[in-house]
Structure formats: C-alpha cells, structure tokens
Length: 99
Ligand SMILES: [Zn+2]
Image (cartoon, rainbow, N blue to C red; front, side, top):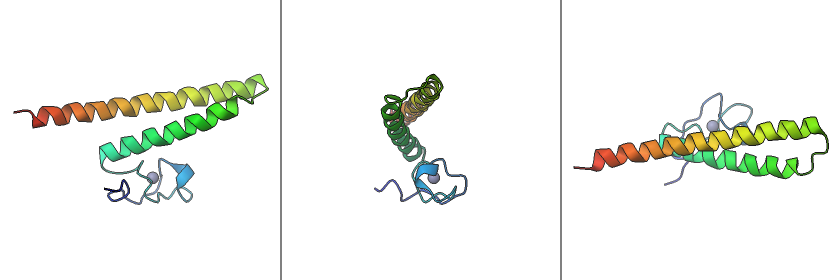
C-alpha cells in the first residue's frame, strides 16, 4: 500500500516543504489514517533534523547556533510525540485483537 493512497488533498498542509504553497499534494503527513500520518510526520522531522544538524555544525554566530538548537529540540520533540502516538495506536490495536 502506498502511503499516499488514502491521503486527502487539503489546505494548510503539515508539510510545507513538499507541498505547493500550503496546498497539500498528498504528502502523507495530512492523511486521515493516523498510522500513515504519524509515520510520515516522523520521517519528515527526521529529515528536517538531519538538515538542521548539518547546518548547525557550520554556525559561527551564537544567535544562529541558538536558533539551530531550538530547531533541533523542536524536531526531536515532534519525533518523540509521534512515536508515542504510534505506540498508543499499536497498544489499542493489540487490545482490540486480544480475545
Ligand atoms: Zn500535507
């Protein structure tokens, strides 16, 4: 199954990096399916985190470095948040499947 199959096109895309303006082009981050949504968001934040980590290594000025640290923390928090939501979904599914 493609992660894009059940995504809906909508305004206010969660992932402006892969949308046209703010119009979602089925990025997965806006999917109605929670597992697809959270998995896509984790992948997005991991990419953003790698990007900002690479940039932060070249930051010379304190204020620039501080801004990168804020971005790094924000992406790590989002990854932890969506990983926790995925675990919650898996737990709920396990309870539903148990006799
Ligand atoms: Zn989107």
